[in-house]
Length: 188
Image 1 (cartoon, rainbow, N blue to C red):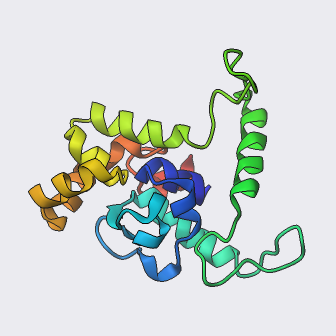
Image 2 (cartoon, rainbow, N blue to C red):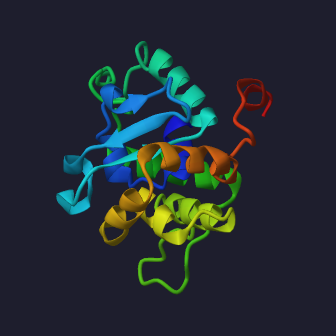
């Protein structure tokens, strides 16, 4: 849950997300913050600061508590040096199981391999669409997503404090459970 909510709330790439270390996230910041290091990014084009919703913060806190006592199917513990400690293949399998359980496992008949209509990358598209519909300038959304063409433009025009406020003001658009308050999260 924490991983999927994080992807939907940040528009981050799965590869970037799976490399995150606990020191990369600031759960006590308002809004919660993540530093995506250049070496995590596609083609190592440059790191960026991104923010995530309160519901993600709460889910990550919960995950970090339970992962200590959890073991992978291999019997090995989850790595302590990574926030999530999963492989891309494992995430894809978990995603496909979730799609099947919810009846959303349709395949795209127009593709040669009949890929799923809703794949993990769909969460980036969700982020982009929702933030755009909420009124965040397109170049800022693209910058948050790590599109190199827009990174300088969005981060040069606004400082990090202004970008954090802009995210906080629009985070409901990418919050799955609503406002993200802990009590609302637990109810749903």
